Amino acid sequence: MIEWPERNRPGFVAFHHDYREDGWGLGKPEDESYFDFEQIREYMRGVLVHPGNFFGLIDQFGETLQFYVNDDRTVQIDFIVEARRGSLVKMAPLDECIALVESAGPSLAALVIPGAVFQAW
Image 1: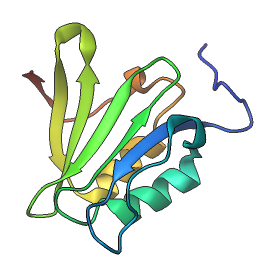
Image 2: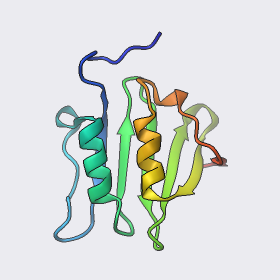
Image 3: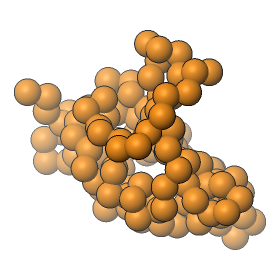
Image 4: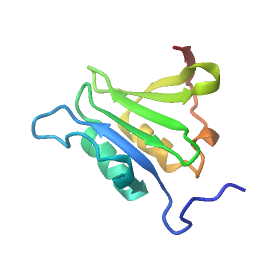
């Protein structure tokens, strides 16, 4: 069974960029950005509201899940599949993206993203 690196503090390394002048700005260095689910939810709701903004998570195994805001304010889910040199991609509303993250365990590789389509790079 896979366990969280810190049993009492589940979460992921997070990265983001908010392009608004009065927004959340550029993410913190990796050693300062280990976020628990409450922080992740707060950042997703704060950042993923403006076209061009993005937010992402990296688990302790190097798996990466990213979100990008489209012009119509839908969010593109982009789960990197390094071994296949591509990503699983899906457009979704913000609440669905947050629910996806909240369903994650220690390894993002175990996520199920219904309706996602593989796109080679």
